[in-house]
Image (cartoon, rainbow, N blue to C red; front, top):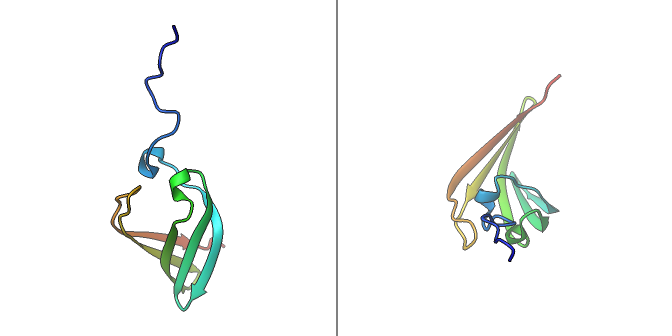
Length: 87
C-alpha cells in the first residue's frame, strides 16, 4: 500500500506559495496602471486585475498597490515598490 504524502503538491493560496509570477496586459490612465493577468503561476491568479498608482521622479519609479480582499487572497492594505535606476 502506498503512503499518502504529508504535503500538498501545490499550495492552496498565493501567500503560501511565497512566489508570484504572472503575465498579461496593462492599461495606462493618468498615473494609474491596470494589470490584467491572463497567465499566472498560481491558478487563482488568472483573471484578476491589479491597479497601481505610479510616480516617476529623478530616476525613481514608485508603484503603490492598494490591495482588496477576495475569496482566494484575503490580503488588504497597501504594498509600495520603489525601483531606482542605477547609473
